[in-house]
Length: 235
Length: 207
Ligand SMILES: [Zn+2]
Image (cartoon, rainbow over all chains, first blue to last red; front, top):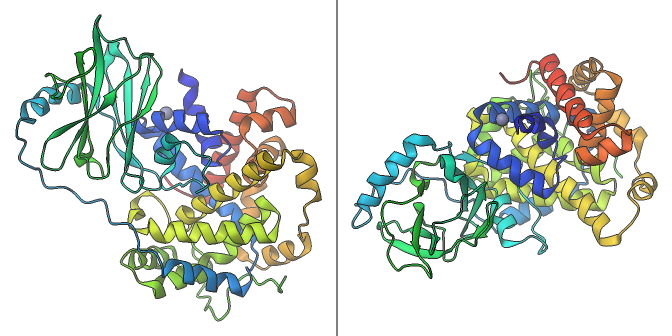
């Protein structure tokens, strides 16, 4: 629905619940206008803090500085040099067709979530400070977004209006290792609006693939893929 | 609580920079300090803290109301900022705005989870938590930047301002704001967005 662009203000003020936030972040992944607007509205909202200044107790400074001395900053998001694509190469070529149809820009989320244990694995990924999303518009098949967090070490796929796999087939997910190997990462449960945490360690994955496989899944991806979510292009 | 000052101790005040820059450190300096922090420079991060903590703490206190909770929120937020400082991109906004986004989200999560945990009536909870309005007002009054922001806020319509403040300082979702103001959800959403756009344009922020 068109109305979703109207949520920029509420989103910028954190005036959304977790479900609205996740949905809007999927939209942000593919709407440059909303990304720009959210950034400017957040900047404006931050200025309101000029009207509520309060000096914290001096002990807080000590606690903060003691706290950071025990943690190192996260590594930067590096531009990975293209690896030699072994048997995975044809997959990439086929995926390029999909990519031309529409790959949303990967984007970076500066916001973070509380560390309490009440978050699901999917929420931890979606709310991680280093979460990146790549959205792929599959046309009549629907829309899928993969969000990956290196710090959580997991990836989450969220689908919208996803057409069912052909009779007797399933959608299977794959994590691409830096060496170019495709590692099975689980079968997509049926349903058009789905969210699933991929199996396996996604921290070093350079891409996520989505293929159609015979029921029960395969050990190697069947080409061409339905979609490729290329995180090596993410910044 | 200690006496409130608008500017951290010992900080020089070389004129008021525009936009979201703190009064004593320019936006560019703050971005540089944050980038040095991302390379593990704890001294640079201490300067980031000194330049921003009265804003971060004041905002957290306004949202969560309880000083001890506000301290926890601020501590967690700065730790997160330190950890993810590598991911701060000056092209996407000011360092202060980036930091306050983290603080605000933590503060909102805190009030919401506290309410969920205690099942306490939100209105009761918020109205009975102590807030020292006088000290907050004193600190705000001392800041030239605050006067500029107040001027910008005054360009909002009364209903826009009400919706923005309930969402930002109250920590309520736009759906809750709609119920509290007895207006349709779409109306609350629009008031928040239009109000922020007006504030942004009055302050000359962003593109
Ligand atoms: Zn949009």
